[in-house]
Image 1 (cartoon, rainbow, N blue to C red):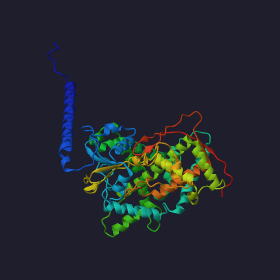
Image 2 (cartoon, rainbow, N blue to C red):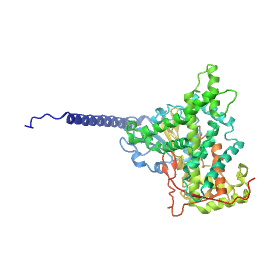
Image 3 (tube, rainbow, N blue to C red):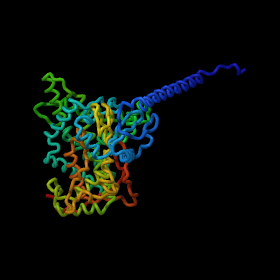
Length: 516
């Protein structure tokens, strides 16, 4: 009879696994509940933290932020609490800076106090504090950063005469656009390649062809990681998610490893093989030479081949994605606002003429073009939520306690969309940056490259690139939507940066009389 048959081994194993899973969930929930109780009821009496929303147990305010526009929600909460508030992402305390004065006070006037990076998995486990952008604050970071950008300036980066390098690459880009004048084009890859080549030429000593399969792959990995970073960043506040494939953390780390091994490490090895201290060809050579110099002096130094790898990765990422994103937004807004595009072209024709290309010398006279660029940078500020900082010491801000190691999140979107500073901030109005005489004026609250110790060190180069790319492209082309294409969204999608949704355009050449 079947009544006395013993359960099958598979059934017992299934029950055992289910019991184990329930036990893990119970333990995890209990620990989180304990942490939340300690946070809510035991830690507060000793600290005078900035007030803020209470949030959900275990989850903090994350459920109320959503995934599509957390920058907008944080800006709204910041306005409610006067530009400064404490909240919790999971059980992790975060102090949010959400208006101009608060950000300037904390980042611009408080010295080193708000200049660290938080000890979160995306910083500790991915890069272990190496490089520049994600490195922890201290003597080695200061030394590495100062040396790196002195070396880049020594190689010409950001200097006035470096504009020739930029315009040369713009020429390659324009030739590519002219090759298929009636074919709809997604400008993403072409812009990324052009901008990246400017950095690559001085860091690696080479540029890449637009159709290079290897380089296409590298740029695709970089862009995917900028998009993944928002979701993968949840690992910072829920560390167990790094074991969950759908969190994006594993994919983010895998992409980064492939990018470094295929592009960065390979270039460093080739430079090591051909290195000649009497012929410094590019940034990698300069860094390798510095490693040897310090090694011969017997110094304990942050200059190592491993750190070089991360410095290059930072330069490649920051030097490519941010400027290329700004240009994609610029083209999208010109398509959406043809009257503005026409007015920029009229100014270019009047100031520059049709016989030659715009140059940096004309920049002071191209007032409307500069105003348009600034308004694009304001209305679609790509670093809507900047990379988080951390306090280096116990400090105070407006009388509130900010303990050492606190994660600090500047929300620059709130500065650029403050209705008191920028009336009707969601309206595209380049005239905000023009005075009554039509001359360009930079607004005090306009901070396109951030502020403080961690502000973008490549501000001068990025500013040159955006100006020259934008004016050259509008001087040579009319940009329109392909026939029958729907109006593209101007909302954007948030990863680590605010990027436009994919779109296609038609680049129709404008007549050039004669190039000098």
